[in-house]
Image 1 (cartoon, helix red, strand yellow):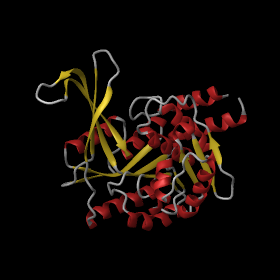
Image 2 (spheres, rainbow, N blue to C red; image 1 turned 90 degrees about the vertical axis):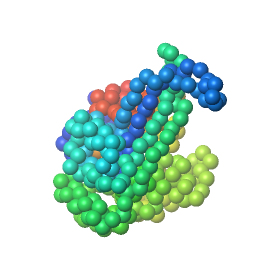
Image 3 (cartoon, rainbow, N blue to C red; image 1 turned 60 degrees about the vertical axis):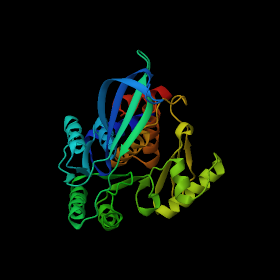
Image 4 (cartoon, rainbow, N blue to C red; image 1 turned 180 degrees about the vertical axis):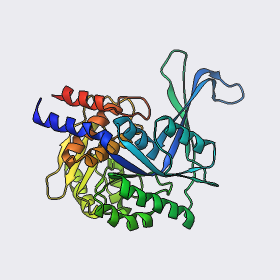
Amino acid sequence: MKEHIRELFAVIDKFPLVRIAVWGDIILDEYLFGTTRRISREAPVLILSYHKKEFTLGGAGNSLLNLRALGVEPVPIGVVGADESGRAVRNILKKRGIATDGLIVERGYATPLKTRILAGEENTKKQQILRIDREGRVPDTAALKQKIRQALHKAEKECDALLISDYHYDTVKEDLFKAALPSLKKAGLAVALDSRFRLLRFAGVTIATPNEPEVEEALKIRLDDDPDRLVEAGRILLKKLQSPALLITRGSKGMALFQKGKPPVHLPIFGTTDIVDVTGAGDTVISVFTAALACGATFLQAARLANFAGGIVVMKKGTATVTPLELKQAIVAEQ
């Protein structure tokens, strides 16, 4: 076996030895499946025959499930409502063997729920025809912030890394982040960031994993698929974040890794560019990257593993996870 394959395998084999805290917005994803019948006589809309309903987790919840699938012990730091969706979140986590001690149940807060309706004719592949978002904002009360602060302090002592999953529902408080960061760094924890709209508000993280649209939004620029602009944007963002590394995900074009004092490394997508579904792929990428860092991998090794994981998960339907065996098979298949 080639040396670099052995090194990547060794990182994967350490996944069950680490604990990773996931601080962020937990979303419940609901899927309603139906069969197309006809157009309604009352209005120009489709009539569907209901078939079944399925639930999974999005946002930080998807990162928790991805880490669990890797064999890592994930530790949630998040908020759910005292509602039906919140109970569904806790049940899903418990079924996957994920402790829910770090979940804060907040009365008056509505757990974010995204309902996707998928339909098609009998015996055909179902397509998404509608999505309904029911969203809530995490309160900014002193009592709630104290509970989050305590959970972060506990994670600092008991975990090997912190993954921040910010979908802009305000679970991740900027003042709490700034207060906790110095002690997290002093404890030697890698801090990984996935932030949809507030990328530049969390300077000092170990690694951020934005996609190209998030880079464009943060820097108020257009990349226009220009390699030179991408490199310049990566260097600017790395400096603004004051981070040792940055991983920009590029969909079917792969990834670009930027490290302080080193030339950028471009990683082509693993597998085919004929992508099935990118839903939740970013959660998989940051989960694998963070797990690898927690196991002592270099930034480049972590990026390679994350790239394999991204290429695998986009070939699956909906929010999906990747297993250690799939990662190892992908590494061997690339040779």
